[in-house]
Length: 222
Length: 222
DNA sequence: AGGAGTTTGTGAACGCGAGAACAAACCGGA
DNA sequence: TCCGGTTTGTTCTCGCGTTCACAAACTCCT
Ligand SMILES: NC(=O)c1ccc[n+]([C@@H]2O[C@H](COP(=O)([O-])OP(=O)(O)OC[C@H]3O[C@@H](n4cnc5c(N)ncnc54)[C@H](O)[C@@H]3O)[C@@H](O)[C@H]2O)c1
Ligand SMILES: NC(=O)c1ccc[n+]([C@@H]2O[C@H](COP(=O)([O-])OP(=O)(O)OC[C@H]3O[C@@H](n4cnc5c(N)ncnc54)[C@H](O)[C@@H]3O)[C@@H](O)[C@H]2O)c1
Image 1 (cartoon, chains in turn red, blue, purple, brown):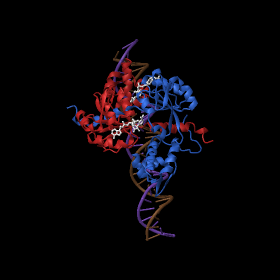
Image 2 (cartoon, chains in turn blue, green, orange, cyan):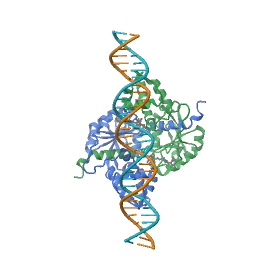
Image 3 (cartoon, protein in one colour):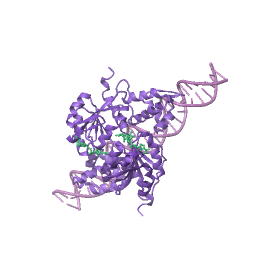
Image 4 (cartoon, chains in turn brown, orange, green, blue):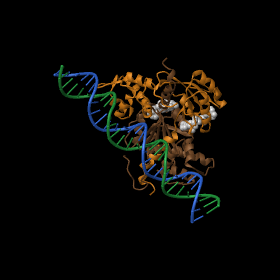
């Protein structure tokens, strides 16, 4: 599925901008909860930890939702970004692999408030099927097809060991899931129309380690 | 601390390359465990999920560790990358906030094998101090200074609620920690010499949701 | 030794994103 | 109505990262 220019709402938002929209949304939610009705691009940029010029350019891809000389209406902009991202309604999500990490994810309350709803927890280990995590029964992995179909699940989360991740991904793709969030430290092979995002703790730490080593290299190898 | 060109090993590796080196390292470890002695850039690129030209350019920043017409010696390249990243020895790490996520992190065995060692688990809640997670005592947050000093900790992980994250970061910076991995959904304010990397599950899911919405938009708003 | 085949390392072109800078647009007061 | 102050939306420029393409270098076979 290559980038196709659709007739209406024809703007295709740069990937770098898409990755920042959730940050802006989070900042706007915080501002709204604090009772702020209006904010300038500078204020919002500080709250989001970015440059204000970059913020304005990002928002300009969505449309002209600000007022010159005034700023942005917090609740209005918040809704517009949420609509653009697609989190004005909840997305059903399945989590596969209910071990250490999968349980933490299932217990994470930030899901619900940010546009997602966990509809199933699946695990291949029968010993896990007794458990109830975060009020949800852990079910056999074989029920993936049925659940994905019944709830029209488009997004799947993989929290299994690395060796099982490719198999799980294949099964997910087979039942129509087209977006995967992968926590297993392995490269997934999927069709081009399926989006995969990976979260790898070890990689993040190793990037930090690289810079850390550089900071202290002056005294090393004496 | 601006980028300073040091006399020897003068190359400063592009940030995009630094972020991929851990992926190459992981692929090399897998190849090594499979008994592969030599691999071409094409093979390694497939294993790492990247373009082979990009892989070669990335590796060229480290030096010329390959042999034309042959490829790369897996174990030799593995060591060179590990050395460049700085994970030939273990980095001591502290985890703050031993809730759902912090416990999962503490139990994660991938730490040890990838160059990191958890030296302390800290939590502000006295009720947590009874617990032993992954064989490590959960200690009061106030012991951060002592532990950071005793173990020369340079890397800290924040897994507290968002409201506490900035305070925790300030304390970490105060005791000499210069690299922070932040799981709390908030923007951290730290001095320029401190590196912060953030992992935000909700943002990843929202990015997926954006693309997912685009995929199915043809039938929507009928 | 020489040549065919293979693979690395890198120069060059290209596209995207970041940031500065500024004109256009809005508000409020006189 | 006009004018000064403010802030957005956009244009322009620059630097970084990706990718192509190919010469250089190595192996192996004859
Ligand atoms: N725990 C962490 O903090 C952490 C951090 C970073 C990455 N990871 C990665 O996340 C993944 C999960 O980590 P974890 O610590 O939760 O591991 P875990 O062993 O505690 O849990 C894995 C779960 O997956 C289930 N499983 C195994 N094969 C399966 C299959 N084919 N189908 C369905 N379920 C299956 C197991 O029964 C188990 O319950 C691993 O790949 C790990 O490398 C974990
Ligand atoms: N659970 C997840 O899967 C998940 C996913 C994404 C993001 N997060 C984020 O990670 C963070 C932790 O999530 P969680 O589910 O583990 O929350 P949690 O409430 O289970 O755990 C938080 C822990 O932090 C401790 N804490 C609070 N204030 C502290 C302080 N000032 N100093 C030290 N410790 C303190 C609490 O006592 C508690 O043990 C949150 O910010 C959450 O938004 C969690």
